[in-house]
Length: 189
Image (cartoon, rainbow, N blue to C red; front, top):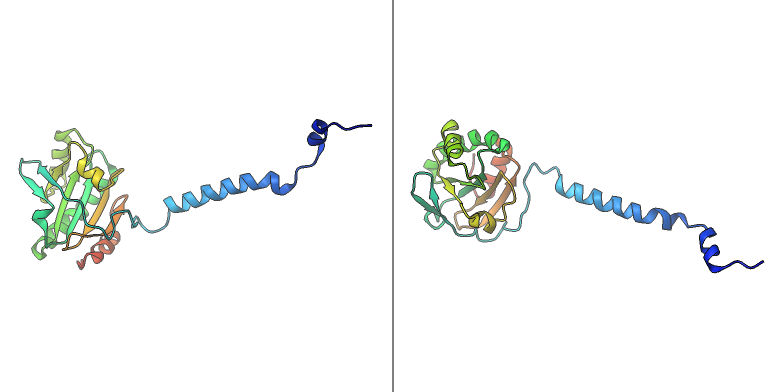
């Protein structure tokens, strides 16, 4: 009796290693990705701009004025990207308002950048509802958002007096996460 090569390959047992290795590798990659995305660091992440010069910008305020990063040189800056439709942005707005009220006399600048929100009526209502006294800047072509690598809101950058990004937070600030970010730019809160 002769066995053809085709029938021999069909009946030969597959080793458990060959059978289970590909799914195990796939599961390990998915787990590593999940840990990377959901790491328990409270939103504090490195980000590609940390320890690099903050990208320059000059943007228009809601009332027609302008604010540039250059005009804030020598001051620590909390740069927050937000949108009126963003629920976590609503949660962090009072925290940023309080920070601005308490720290502006000490030189800290809090600046908001409106991200991908075309409804200026909703944007103005948001700033009024939360009594935001710090400037909210319009980024109509998303040039500043792109320069900072913003992919969603809220995202906050902590920029030191020398204009270097020293911290980054995504997903909505809490008082604890704000304090951690401020510490990276030498602000005690």
